[in-house]
Length: 239
Ligand code: UDP
Image 1 (cartoon, protein in one colour):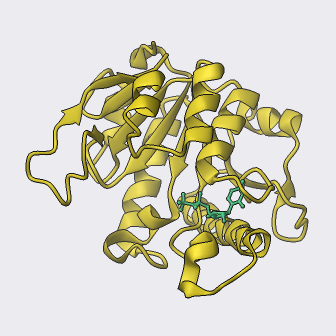
Image 2 (tube, rainbow, N blue to C red; image 1 turned 180 degrees about the vertical axis):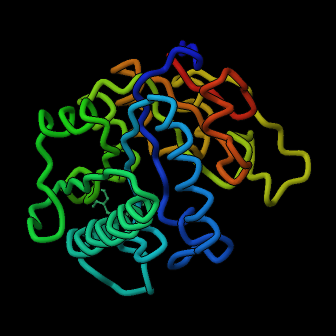
């Protein structure tokens, strides 16, 4: 179980939808302003920050646009969408004078560095923020699984999933007034209760590799900073 006051390296998972704000589409200026301020706030305390971005604000896998598309092709478009988000986030952080490296799981060298684990770790050691794009580079996976995989590779102590809700609920809080939020859960409970946190591949990976996950509402000012200072408002998932 993670003690949030001693964390030195975190992996922040951002869905594409988060970047899209209210509409969940495209880029929301206010969201990106607030998000980058918060990332910088924790990075300035000396915490290593790696980010995995999703792509749902631009393209939503095989379901997107109702097209009857081959799954692999749709997933490739989805992975490219995450590269766009990575470029956007890199730009937004650089405009606030941070050193950032966008690393892609697919080779697209004129846009981003190709992902090499040792190089990623070196960037962190040099005080750079890294953004991992293109998920795992493989179709049939999600960026949640990419977050779990990269967290294991770079030895992040926790995955923080930034969302627009306060944590994990027993049912959708946007649909049900009596939805109850969990403060803590085990991975097995998440799988058994089929809670909508991350896909089961990502959850199993985190359980097998003992990587804790914290789900928090990123829209709150200083939510990341406060979490690292020991506050607990979201939901912690662990083995
Ligand atoms: N994707 C993929 N392999 C990966 C990660 C992502 O094929 O390793 C594709 C998949 O189509 C997915 C899309 O990229 O739907 C966008 O990622 P995701 O849905 O995880 O983004 P989020 O929901 O976090 O915005």
